[in-house]
Image (cartoon, rainbow, N blue to C red):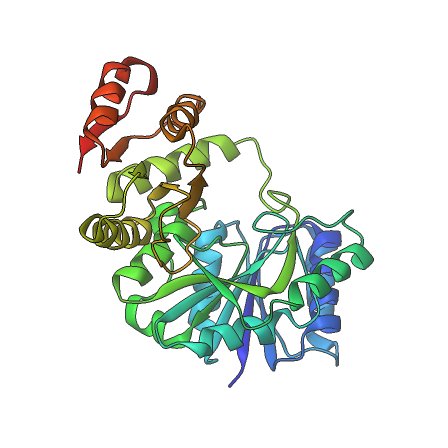
Length: 342
């Protein structure tokens, strides 16, 4: 087994060189780099051409004479790939030691894991600086969690390892999202619909210089277009809250079932549980957040937590207490959520 690392590139020679040098230094798993050059100008073009004779690398170069965008470049790489695993990697990344072997190991650990992210400065841990030494320190810290993973609502496309069987089943990225944005989220949800989980390998680390590879005057326009297409296909992600003030096996089962289903479709669930009650016993998921509130003044603390959310308000609140449900309904004009008594 080996992995083809697909790197879409549009200029940014220094970033690209840092990325590829970090791969050479820190990758123990067998790999080939498939670089897709989206009409880069001379400095980057010449650098990529030079890599074809670099004896340290198994290197394939695809050159486009016009910028086809990130999404199409990824698919060009997938079409050229033949490995058992594919890694889609932005060129504004720096990989940590052991990153790929750990991501592949997590992918192999369960049949239903199809797509794997590493930890990163955007997903878990910030280095003190973007220096290689500080990135290596973060990678070493993360390595202590080797073998552990966290289920995600969707993987982020800056660095994703995908099993070959996933690609065989659902194909490549949907080019309706071209030139980019939400193509990675859409791919995760398509994979989940086919029975594959997206997870974060907690023992792998890749630093990401966010948006550095995709900066142009149309960035905001591309983002809004991708978001609108995504919402048309899946609906806008919802934020739901379950309030648990007493032990009820049927309510516990409902929360477990609904939360897992909602999270698999990119929604977010919060659970406010009275601390004196037993835990719900759920698989850890990035889109499901548990909070244990002290039993004393539980209702007051609950209302405060709901009302202090100013920007990302709850869309729906489920409550197991008649009086609390009634009170929350009287202040709907503040929190804006729909209230349902369970």
